[in-house]
Length: 315
Image (cartoon, rainbow, N blue to C red):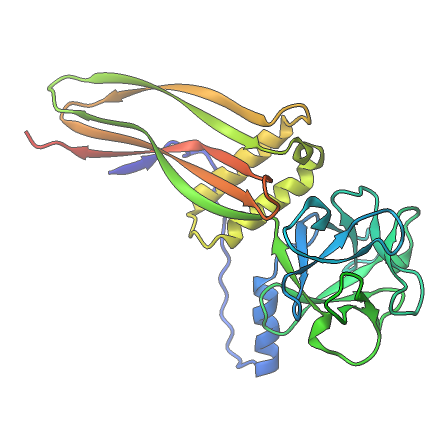
């Protein structure tokens, strides 16, 4: 039989509904797009162009036009944090991960009047992300002050980037790529077969919590939590409700103790198990490995809850 020590962890609730009307194809495509899009607020992404799929939005300096796209290995200055405006809902600032305080802005009507700005918050730094048809996590990115101007890339060069207010083309479509590639695995922390007629005690020690390879993640723990959750949901691993709840709880608890001075936000737990006579006893722990799109930007979450499986031994 099977039971979990996470009995007191709240499970996610689900809401089901039934639609009796038949939507049009256009409406259906819009609905499909909206269902598969990521959460934007506080999330961190690589932003890549549809026509030039290896070209990632990047910032390489503090001047206004020290911004464009880079085709090559991902680096931290190609990570962007989205923040919804407090007053104008549905519009976001696009903030660079490395150049803290730098936002993508459009200070004029020209195509190249687009780039980095660090200073007071203005409405020309606000952008709307609109899902592009039924393509998963593809968007057009439109400026608030210049509502016809969409972020665009009109050539292969790093500087062939800005905004365009003319006719639509696919080089104005951008894909949001989650920060991590997440993979769930199961680790056996105890496996014991008691083939005797007496009870046997077994004590095990295992780690719970989180480790990171880059201490800078600790300084942006709020956005890291959103990124970890998004990447786990995008992994397609088919997490159960209890595993998902345990993962979120472990991440939240770990980050509440985070510090930029350490890469380990974990603790060792010691648990004693009493194994009944003629019983095989297996204890497993779920671990989520996050491999960063930026090399070396890795996180491991060792979920606090463990699972116990038992089976009778024939004698």
